[in-house]
Image (cartoon, rainbow, N blue to C red):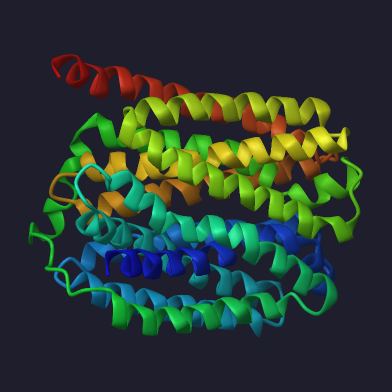
Length: 387
């Protein structure tokens, strides 16, 4: 029963993963269909990310509701937002639809992480969270390439229709396989914010925003980079997205396992440093096809390897505000996505070339790495020495 419950939770992150990351693969098609530039189309990525940041605050008002009820409501918003995206008629309507689609993202990850940890056996909390997040990595392994293929051969609108269908299946799965978990302690609205008085959650949130922002400077424009700089054809994009998805799956799996063996902060800091190096190498060798594809896999591996450790760290360092704390990681993640896509778009708007967003992402990733190392030295090493 626990396995079925975790798989159900991962179905939700699968839908969210397709909604979020498919846009990277279909960006050129959407831009052509709506008669806008690639840089303008990048605003649809930012709109989703802003929706995530706004929607996560919904959990502050839902602390009195059972977790299962909240999950069902969020699944309904996933279905609605993506159906609106599918029938959008122009830039403004799609921008609004993408914002609505992003609203349930952070909240779902927040409440889903809490449910996953409550279902997990002792000593496997990070792996349980990683299994929930696995849906997003599978979406990138299978769903995003399918979405890219649908957009190329049929219509980009079908991508959002597919996400809506998955969300409807999720609603029925949640009703059947998620147990009725007791409500969290009622600390009131203000009580949920008390954990923010500590520096620990702010360090984690800053690291998440900067680290993911650095990678999304480059990843937001991965399709034109691969086709116009690295020399791949449009027909090869689906296969390349499968490679990126494989990097996500492996990163999420190993990130969860390493976080249960070592300290999560140390694992996240090390991998964030590797990501910064990979971004610099992408800038230098983007015109070498096989190397660009390899570095793409390495960067995406690091992006998702730090996800479960960061999610677990916020849960541990948000006493009395677990709902908000768990959702805050996704807020920071997507705030980083918005900043990254915007900064990367500036480089493209100034005609610097599609490899330059990766260079802009390097200092952001390094700053994220620095935050995580400081967190590790201040909050993890003392407890480790005591043990």
